[in-house]
Length: 184
Image 1 (tube, rainbow, N blue to C red):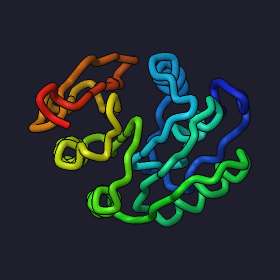
Image 2 (cartoon, rainbow, N blue to C red; image 1 turned 30 degrees about the vertical axis):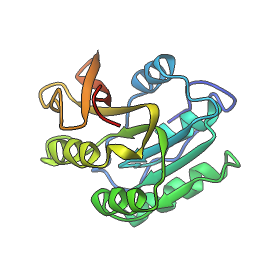
Image 3 (cartoon, helix red, strand yellow; image 1 turned 180 degrees about the vertical axis):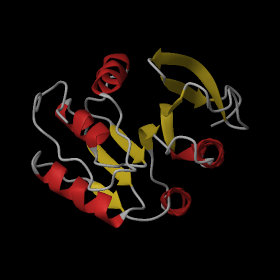
Image 4 (spheres, rainbow, N blue to C red; image 1 turned 90 degrees about the horizontal axis):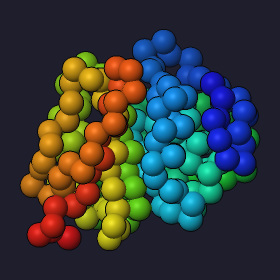
């Protein structure tokens, strides 16, 4: 895989030695960073895989990245990949539910949260609900982006976050959320 833009454009990023890992396609990553400006912002990535989505953000000037990934081998790959970019990222090797709870208790805040739960596993709805429950992790003006399969979309609204737009790229959909008007 190659980084699609920014300072490290065309740098090769290693994949995870696990055939079950699905990667966000280059066209989706490029479109994502054409939509949102990450320069100088703080990012939380859930289900980090190889770290390619965070690597793209780093290449485009993100200030800080926190990556949550449950797989130990994936975390090893993420560390290896991000070391090439000379960027200090926080990598949390636990289940996303535990990570969100801990980050919330520490009062961490992010400009955007990107989540790419494994497709067709039942984790999509749970991911949406956990992010909705911990929406205080978003800074004012912050957004949540959830990547999903076109036939398995996250809800439009939760208790605290609401859908702003959806963008489709082949069979992949990016859903963009922000805090509800009467919240936060």
